[in-house]
Length: 477
Image (cartoon, rainbow, N blue to C red; front, side, top):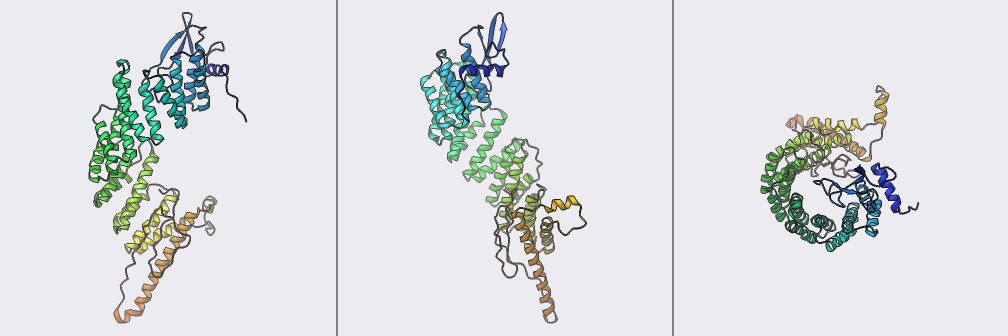
């Protein structure tokens, strides 16, 4: 289907529909003393995210003002940008740029609005070109710092980090040269530019420089949310710089000062990994359990669940691989309580069974494996079950769950074979040497991991030296 480009008349009609104005007028009007008062934005071309601290101004126009169409197009462009209608917003701003009625105030406003449309729609190359033109053609405009900040973000997204840093520094310099009429807004822009400088260094991998800037930001008079963010990012930069002692100190201070911040679960993950890397096992275990046992009371429960599962799975696997089976088992048991979903709970049960098996608690290991087999068994042979239960069991499990059930059944068979062999050896040798003690199970060389993909057929070996890996499930990380 071919769409025709809207005409100015059509766009004005849209304005009247959006604002609820009478058919004889365009824009939002309030009649006072024989004049029509049209509401205009305080930051031309800006969206709500770009002008959070501005109050709308009012321009008084006569009812037959020929400039009213330009104001209506400007307002329509802003409204369409807010609604993510990029094509229509672009048309509205371009109509202003080509209109003979547009004056020297309208043109820079429309140009900046067009740049923001391109940036928000993902056309970063076009957005950068329009920002550059705006800065070149209107170097004394009051919104030059805003344009420089947005241009820096656009260039960073395009991979031009050095150019972006230059633009952010230009924001700070430009705010010092402008009048004090909008000093509060300029101060916010200068602080935001410092955040962007630190973030750009972080994305470049220059973690030492990023930590320096984030540490400075913590000393500024910022909103609590911004100070918490700067504190966390400072610890994150130290962690990526492999300064684990510094990261532990900074992250502990952050957790004590901002216990309700949204980045707390990620901070606990970084803290646990840092402690484990330094060999402080007990502290790493306590930090992991503190995260796993925390109620998901944050604004984003899914974010908490993600970091709980990632932290627990990584630390438990690490403990298991290093031979610290008891601590690995403790974490796996906590992981099992995070979700009742079979796709998450059953792979954790398999890992728990491997831990029990390594600890020679064969009955508990067999019970863990049997839980998996029973949960994934077909509904066929249970005549006493209800129809609802039969229908639920009749659902075919996904291939990963089927593989997990097969591996669990194989482990049960191995345990039974091991027990029968021990009894037979004891019966043969007991008249001569007495009952033989149970031989220790061979070590498992493969770490159980929820994330690990398994082959369709395990490599069967003699004895009890096969260590399977849990199937990869959608609930795993």
